[in-house]
Length: 478
Image (cartoon, rainbow, N blue to C red; front, side):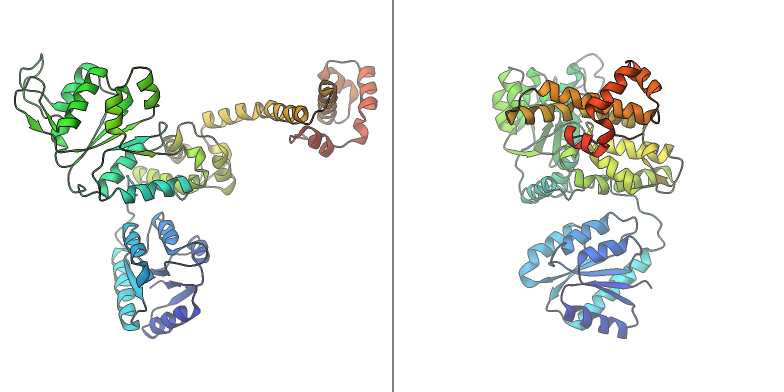
């Protein structure tokens, strides 16, 4: 058996549990903080984790979320005071094995830990488990706000409008809203209203009767009927044709509809969740979206943040997607080096989470080794980065020029002109190892002119560090 980890900032709790478990022949390791346990998870895995929920720094819930990202997840028992029972419920929602209320009976505690250990040993030989395909991950404040909003809506059937750029995971939010609602056992039906031709969309949504149009050889239920008693997710609602906007408004208002070509009034018992990457307020102003439908959909709005606004989540998302790709391809999971992860966190990710997932899948297929270095990333990703870096000096120049102007300085063309000359000459001399004839050819000036400028600009007396400081950019010395 592997060790039982006890994580609590109270020494008395750690000591009591260690003594009781040791008498039962169970090996124990103690931690005074969640941070130290999370660091240890990178080296070894326990049989069971028993953690307090409230500690200085990272909490037991934070630890639990970290454990959920592991390929082989040990059962986690959360210890909590009676006043923290709401947090215990949250722990269950995050996948805790059980919770242990304080103050606890030591015999009951040992029995619970033994049961968790037995369960862990039983599952040890079941093989790798496919990562959850609908799991939402995120520790960034914006994602935590989103999680809290989903929790508050769990007991409500209110219509929700989800907004956010393409690739941010709006459908994941919709699925989470459904899975945590009273209708979780009922169907979740999704339809992308922008992906279906205008002439077919009405039939897709509301169904049709046999013979209602050419090709309608049988009666067909639409998405509203398929989602009966469940949730209907209308993705890219901003692209819905105007005539269908009118019919959708009528269904939301009356909770009834007709199939295409039908005469039977059908009850629409569905919860509607809509999503769009577009600015619906602007589309209303432009006459492209009905204002009354907008207000019907915009009861509760949830904004999904861009990946560049939650850079702290890139590491855990990348690990999750690498694990997911490895499972699908039945191959060993590859790992990003620390430098590569730092590089990924600096990118803007215009395609958001979807782009990161595609990158991880590409790397799993194409990277030659088990460790993924920066050079192993997709060429288009590196090319865009290089293009961005090539423009960075102009941004730095604009910023420095603005600062100089705001400070009321004069003759800025002369000042910056000298700095540019100094940098270009210094770099050229460095490139040619001090050979002035070769440097003058690279610069496009005569050797005598170069010698004069070296003296005028004091290049031999000024090092790179001062030049960099003057311009506000980091120069390459190669």
